Structure formats: C-alpha cells, structure tokens
Length: 284
Image (cartoon, rainbow, N blue to C red; front, side):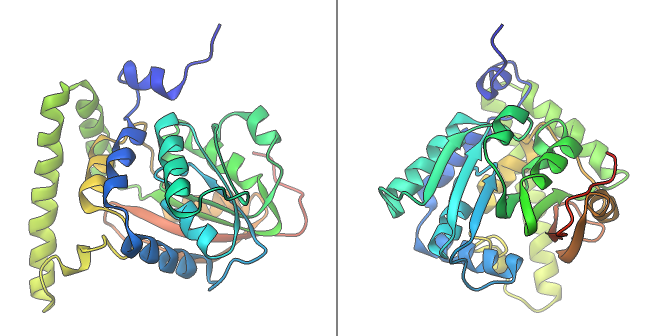
C-alpha cells in the first residue's frame, strides 16, 4: 500500500497547504528579503560567513533561508515534506544560483528514518518553525538532532506553549481546515486586524512609527501576510516551553549556546545548540 503524502493529507484536510502559501510568497522575494534573511541567519548562528560549512535545511519551505545560507558560503542540502515547498526552493535556486552544484534540493520527511539514514551528518542543522508542524514534534526534534555532527550546531525554532492560548489556536487551526476555501481568508484578515491594531498601539506607546518594524516582518525577510496565513492555518500544530526544549536536547548531548524567547506571547522561541563530541545519548 502506498504511504500517504503531504498532498494526500492536504486533500483530506488533515494538513495545511504550507507549500501553496510559500508559492505565493515567492512573488515578493527580492534582494531586500534575501539580505534580511542573511543577516538573521548570521545573528542566529553567531557567524558572519559559512565558508566550508555543510548545512542541512530541514523543512526548507520557501527556500529563502537555504538561499541565505548558500550566499553566506555554506554547501546546502534542503529538503521538505511538501512537494510545493520543494518546487519553491528549486525556483529560488534557479533565480539566484542557477546550476549550483553546492545546493541540493529534494523531497523528504524528517519522520522518515530510511530517508534520514541516507543523509549523513552536517556541521549545521537548521529548522526554523518546522518541527512543530510534523504531527510528531518530539520525534522530529530528536531525528533532526541525530543529523548534527559531533561539535556541530542545531538551530531550531519551536512554537511557544501557552496554557490557555495554545488550545485556543489548536481550535482555530482545525476550524480553518474544515472551512470552505473562500471563507478561510476571513480568519486570516481577522487575525491580521487584531495583531495590526495591537502592534500599532504598542509602537505608539513606545514612540515608534506604527507598523514600521513589520516592514520586513521582524527583520527575518518574511512577509507579514503570508506568515499570518501560515499561523492561522498551520496544522499539524504543537508547542513547547523553552525549558522543555532545552531539557529534551540536553538529555541528548546538546549544550545550549543561545536562545531568543517570546516570553508569555505566542510565536517561536529560537535556540542554538552545540552537540558534544561524545555521541553517547541518554535513553529517549
């Protein structure tokens, strides 16, 4: 029997069409967003250049951060479960680095052990805002960590768990998937309206230009609208506290290098870990 694919799950309304959203995002990617992504990656990895680094982008999405890593000098291996995301990444490679032998793009799942066994290990494993969308977050985190070479780095971002609001957003995302396609944007625009007013009020209270900091969506090079679609509709969906993430990876031989957390708000907590030289791991 054929194993289910991302397209099958989308058709059954069991998964948000992440790749379709990224395909629309491609139309707004230009040098400004690529440059912002490069700066964000430099800040996260604490490195200005990635020359000589082998980087694995787990769940490459639009391919923007794979491109940023490649332009910083890394040899990049990108993969995604969603074939439309793979197509987006291939299109970005065609646009910006055509015929680039140092950037490999393929379809695969971080939950597929046989696929992961074929990859080997990497100096940097990068997975921003992906592993909580697999339907098996902790297994995905564990699998991604196994792809890090000794003394290599693991850079991940995981949705922040909130005792009250996380269950609320689970309900919103499940509602989004069962709604007719023409109605779904109403949820997105409702969220954008709320978030936009809250952001403008906070900016004015702090003496900033309203919405000015959202021009490149927090300087990551992303699109506020497409990120909002992803946030409202993004299912599967799980979340974890910063302490849970650190404890889970510490038990697997990783040392926390740095983190940037969102406090009590929703959004992604960002982590950079270094794998110890000793590959011995605690029981899962």
